[in-house]
Length: 304
Image 1 (cartoon, rainbow, N blue to C red):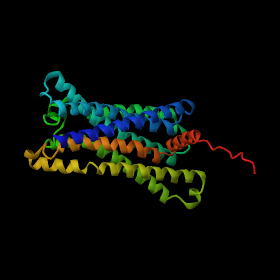
Image 2 (tube, rainbow, N blue to C red):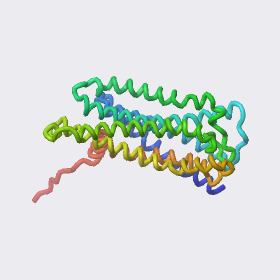
Image 3 (cartoon, helix red, strand yellow):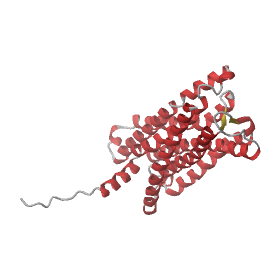
Image 4 (tube, rainbow, N blue to C red):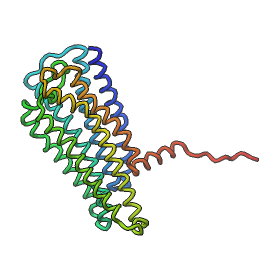
């Protein structure tokens, strides 16, 4: 009982911190976007909005879980079960949308390197259209899991939320494919293409402004890919538990399996919300500028 509550408290704490971090950053970037309508600001806002919406849904779910841990909860039926299943669907869908938003950032940098003269690909309007399509695609890719929610999303009686049971191996991997595997695959392809461009471009061109920007975009894309891959590795315990439950369904739900399954995304989003500041030059520049304004250098006016 106490161990279950501990897992839930970690999830609530990490998700609350994520909300407290992302909300001010979104406000700051939105203010800058009014004065500087560029994709370099728009795309990080998209990622942070994805993190924030995920965290709000996830926090709401974990608060209900904490209530269940403390006061108990009856078996859900009818509308209550449908609401629980929809929350489970939204958590998976929002998480996948956050990962896909990094792919848009990588595509933006790829077009800057390969097609520097085609300004439309770098424009605010084009990237805004891409963001709208991204949110629609994220929803549609996982929509089948909600249409057939009785097959996908089950109520965990001892854990008080709805999700995909480990023994439903192929249902789980359908979702994992969309929220983890495909975004990482797209990122890897973009990274390889940028690496090929850098290595096969003559040294003289790389010393120009265009070449220096290409190398900078390549490095940023590599950082994003490394960050996404590292955070995806955090999900390896879930993969191992899924294999164990698939071959031995009787252990499904034991060893706090589902508490671990839901704790990892909360910690992942908290990590992303912090790391994103350091791997995105424009965002880091804005934050550092605000910091300098809050701590102005006072000239020494003392007499000698």
